[in-house]
Amino acid sequence: MILENFLPGVRHLQNIHPLVIHFPIAFWVGAALFYGLALGLRSDPMARTAFSLLILGTISAVVAVATGLYGGEGVMIARSVREHLLEPHKKVMISTLGISIILAAWAAVSRPFPNKGRAVFLFILLLLLGIMMVGADYGARMVYDYNAGGNACSQPIEFTR
Image 1: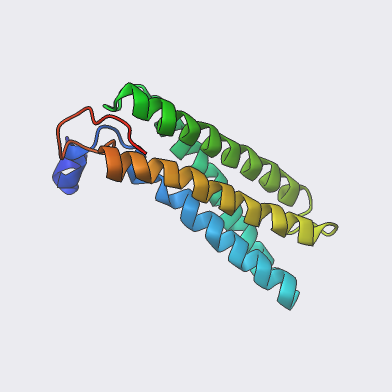
Image 2: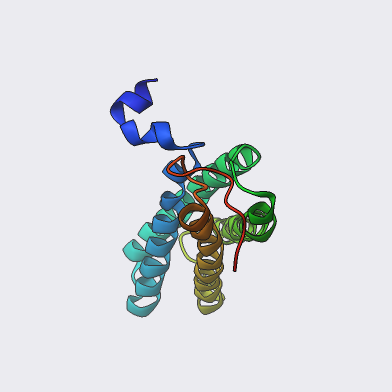
């Protein structure tokens, strides 16, 4: 595969989900930063940048969720890990995507930053980041505690607190 020649570490992945998950994180954090600056500085260029980052975050989250759902059934983890980590991870991250879609639609209607409820909008975006961190923690535990991201050690590893 061409991708494996270009990125040899890819051959150790069980699916491509780990390659795409960092994009929505970066875009959403950037959007929150620029919306905060736009609010504080009353800057339309900052708001336009924030809007672009929010849209890119939402699009990349669609890809991240799609690759996660596609790869989730085939990932080699114990049933206990699937129950305690994968299922909550999936629910939380689908929720973040839903919140992002709502925020992106809200911002698109009154481009680039809602005229009314700006503080509420920014609060919800910050809430999205907090929820995303919870979901990312579930994902990180699967990868780093239970080797869900590759084939570095034997599988399955049973869930432990």
